[in-house]
Image 1 (cartoon, helix red, strand yellow):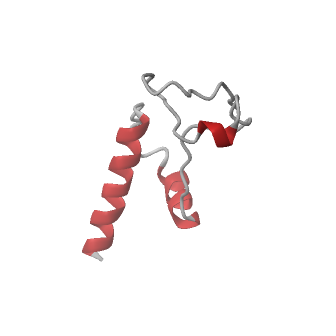
Image 2 (cartoon, helix red, strand yellow; image 1 turned 120 degrees about the vertical axis):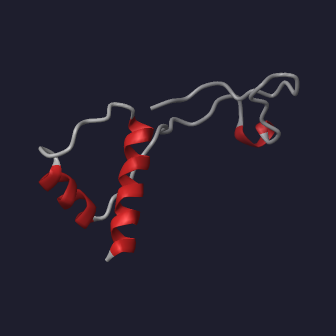
Length: 76
């Protein structure tokens, strides 16, 4: 969870044009990445987890996963 001050100085990096509407502080909110996967994808990942080597970089892992499913769907 995250909250913080609204930047109203136009010379700052995260300047908020509508700062006067928001107030002095942003509301408490969640931030970060989220992935939505179909049940079939999750099931195939669970079945194949022992047969695949692990790639530790998250973005590369998701990109390669999507590419592999796209390629396999094109062959079918």
